Image (cartoon, rainbow, N blue to C red; front, side, top):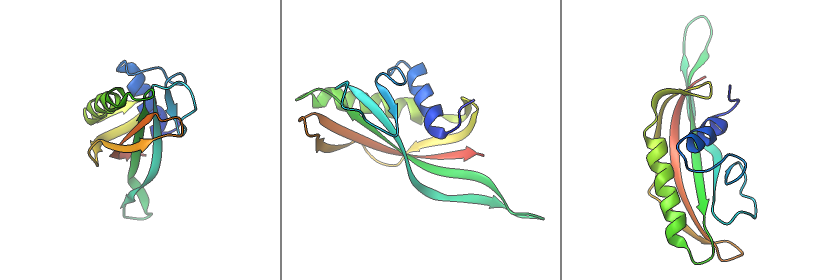
Length: 135
């Protein structure tokens, strides 16, 4: 069972043939190598939705996820293509249990976005998502 939404997403991307977790798909970090890789980050999302009654409990979590892709020097097309494939993979998620996480929906929050080059002149591309998760 996955402990986090990041682990579930990383496993989903690997299952969809977009890389290997720990080799070219990374969670919460983007190491210096390999050039062509994907990093999945969790960041501030919307507040949880609560249920009311005798005690207030969290009914739904709504985390935001950012995925960053990188490719080799002067290969923007590869970084962008990787981001498109990630978007297509994650946008299909609807009412699924992935690695023990019950995900009602993952939806893109942004268009694919070039954020420039890293210190080695490798292109960086991001796309953001919102998720709805049953805790």
